[in-house]
Image (tube, rainbow, N blue to C red; front, side, top):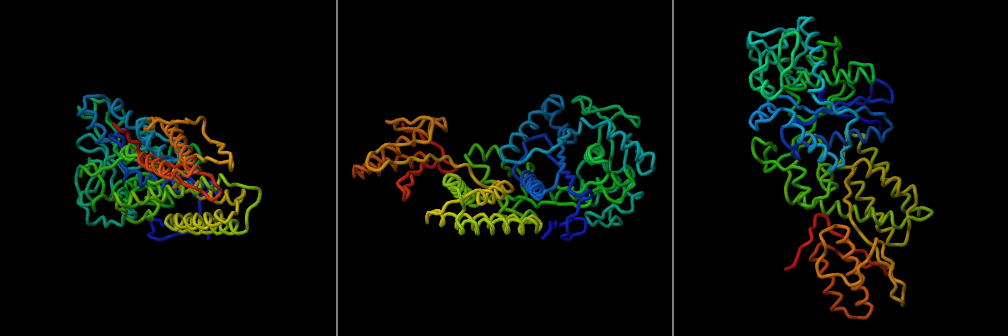
Length: 513
């Protein structure tokens, strides 16, 4: 089955066909960098990352643009309140976004334009709209888009424009209620607070700054013209809260400027992430950021698993229990991945080969069905269970099996990094091979703070425990197991006599006093 995607424009799941064979232009609305992006924002960015990864895994050459909104009502107000320039305020939050993006394993966009870098392109676009007569200067000196001059307005959000209020001066706010949306602002006449923070530019139609909606149109059109020589995007994606007014206004101003009947052929929108039943937002004070989760010791694979266990078009509630379950499940995937790579051999067993073939088939069918990530994740767990059973029976994987697993993990990225050290015995001689840089023979009672050193500390104690077990001193062996468990490590004895020391996902070492 070929890739099919739900198009908000048609309200149907449609076969995906790009404008140019083998190439896909993808524009995704990025963060407004007036504050830290919260995990609800990143739910949208993660679904878009899955979309891009699957397009690339399916053989498409993707040109991905994600903008940073670094000038709008909120960024200016935040800079003003802090008493700094716009640039001084937004730069740290832009860097923080990139750090959080990388931590969550989200691929960086091929182009990441900032709105303030494309002011000339915005001015050219507005000049074109004025020349075409679909924009006008208001009494306040701002420039507005005339919805009455664009009959197709409302087709994305399914608005009946007859029910909208008509305002002589239009709407100046970046975000507004549906009933207020008549003529929206393209260029805002400069105010004192704009000048104070350095957010005003000269233009033929007056000194001022861009409205929020014109920014994405200008950046997208400028970049896809340069790269692909077209005025139409293949895919435009974002959260459901952007359907109106942002994406609706993007379509109006872009199509009015280019004369094309489309700005993007496919519109994809991800649903909200809720906390305690309410949409996560700074306004309600119920936010969690990726850095909060990172500080709590959560692995990014667990966050991705939590998100992908629910379809991107369905609401998702973030709960402590749900996150804990995702951490445990992601840890098990990580342990299986370690085991799979460690036991690689020269030829696949028939059992593992069949399981890998089924994983690949199920992955393709699931993700081609409007990015059905829950089904794709389920296929990984089925393969993990079958793979563990085969490995327990002494069967070994080869390249084809590992390739199937790596393809699934490469697209979904839901596996936790499990730090493990294998300690092997030489029967009867108690000689040890430790797969770590060093091993402390007589470890201290508490682990060091450095993660690598702590792993070596645990390996040393596991080695001592194995020696006590060999000498039938089970009481001391049990005491060491309890000590390791207290500091977040598990010791697992395998049938072949090897020992695996695993640091549990999300654990933190404790210090005794």
